[in-house]
Image 1 (tube, rainbow, N blue to C red):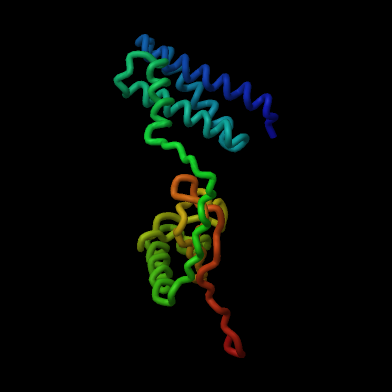
Image 2: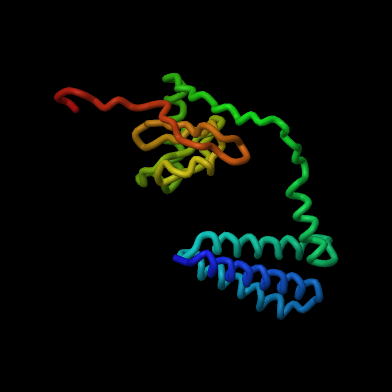
Length: 198
């Protein structure tokens, strides 16, 4: 476990390397830029299994350097200011104190549940996930992904359905399309067989 102080120092180091790399590209010092890019890659690989925050931060810095290289910006400072301003584009002040209303859970009809099961089974047949369990994500009548267990609803848009290998289905609810859902709610459960044949 990395302490927050050490994480902040490493993040500053990664930022500085990214900045130096962008400046090297800006000044056409391509060898120096390449060496600095390799250092960023080394950080990314080093933190991949150790600290996910530093891992994703190093990816973000590498992406920013790459975007700078292909942009029309003449210097990195101007490019960074442009990126910072773009983050605020289209934002509007919400002067109401109202909290977003929780979306109701819509339990599935047997037809919709059967369609989701069919979509998930077809997707499992077409991919390498046939016998790996997990859940197939269905949205808008299409299989859009797979997760090994029901977790991280904030990674999914509210309304997506997760279908497990038995046909049980869960809907991502709450939240919004920008921040993702807040929880998973069961919307279709396969009843276990009862009796001697079961």
